[in-house]
Image (tube, rainbow, N blue to C red; front, side):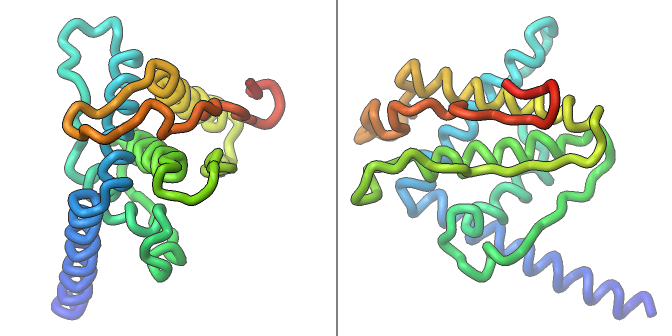
Length: 193
């Protein structure tokens, strides 16, 4: 029955829209989330500039709608704010070359930034292990590891340079910690760094 399928899909779209709106509210109303979100965008912008350095027409960072929707609806779960959401594993289904990896990397950088913003904690927080990724195909593992390395190195470079979002005035140099973000990137076999 097509009507039943359509109704089910509309309910899923409404649920997704609610999660996207909650993500927007989270970024707008939570200072830590706002800082991590700014950090994510700056990191991904730098990484994309590096990836497209030979393209004089590269316009800069431009998220596709599905990418930003995925990121926004995942923020509260990744940050540990919504415990029910942290129990859900979202799968981003999109054709090859569509931008799935950038979505995952962006969300990963948000999580790294969110966990490293220590002024919100009563203890020194090094972030610990934040991201675990596993790919089943060796060629895919090498390709994705290279792409992940670019985003982590861009994040670490911004940290070392003392990057601050210009729109937020009470952000100190030490808030992303003095500890390296790329302390240990590990890939099985010969792709370890």
